[in-house]
Length: 99
Image (tube, rainbow, N blue to C red; front, side, top):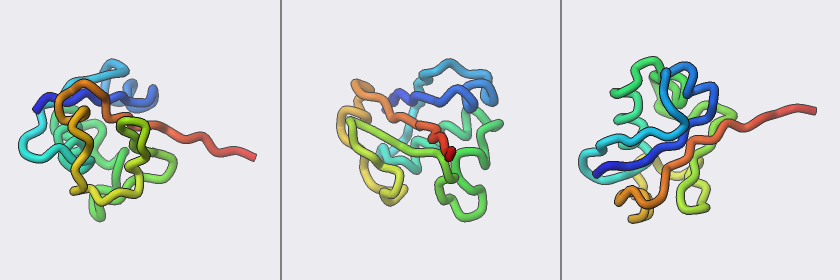
């Protein structure tokens, strides 16, 4: 499947990529499989989106698809069919903290 992924600006710069990239994802389209494909295509992103040892999402990054928050979802949870078919993007959003 070819999926669309929207990257926040800091990750675009690090990966030397556009704001939206397309990736071929083999098998089930899940947050984990998308991140695996993203890190394979853009090795500079390894360890920036998720911890390389535990695989947990880094603080201040969120995942969205079809107006739903998948940040706390199981990495192997299937994403909506619209993401798998490339009609809707998988969005990685950088949060901002302040006080």
